[in-house]
Length: 342
Image (cartoon, rainbow, N blue to C red):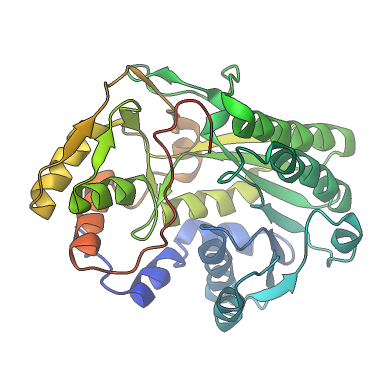
């Protein structure tokens, strides 16, 4: 078993370490990588991974991260990794037009948390901005991040939704994410832009994710709602590695990949294991249902290989992190929401 990261610096180094498949993929593509919406929870490590992959391949290509950069610390951290940064509001079409050309674009922008009560902004970020980007980068290769929320709830015993299932989004956030996908599909077909859409379900690291949410509640003695009784999760570095390798598989019409863990994890069982690791007794509330937001990642695994870190390892790592009082991002996933309100 791989030893757990024990410090923030070690964790961030692990999250941005490129596996061989990423090095091979990026070395085989022409030109730089532009990461739009780099300021989110996955963006900094993805950009760092791309830069380290170019370095490992002996290439001097650029990785440029674009964000509004409300935090100067993030910008400094990216530039320390050799990632260039540009401040830009992607809602401003004039500003987007002034961004540099790039043959490879990773689109990570979007709005989820705080979307309830700000539905119009949610739709602008999740459906209008993709159209702006698609017009600007019609000649580029694009990987666009999406979410498994577009599928809606599915039976826990069914193995999860697959890429060609009908979409049944619940709530305005999920509906706006379908809008995002449709924009990328439309422009991919109209302009011939190669696009890969990656539907990520609960990428986790030690400072953020479903597993941390559960572990913290157990550690603090808070009740755990069992209504969303099942989930998938994947080590964030593995999710980013698959997303970067998706650049090679971008196509017109757009290609789709579910990126998550294959295992259907039961909330009650995960919490009971956390309880043993943390020396605490979980407190449960609500009634477990037989449906959840679950995705089947077989296509991604067949294309990119299996994740390097298993859910069992992640559970152990998160427990050690919480028990030792290490820093967290204080950004709950709200994965337990069944009505699509975030």
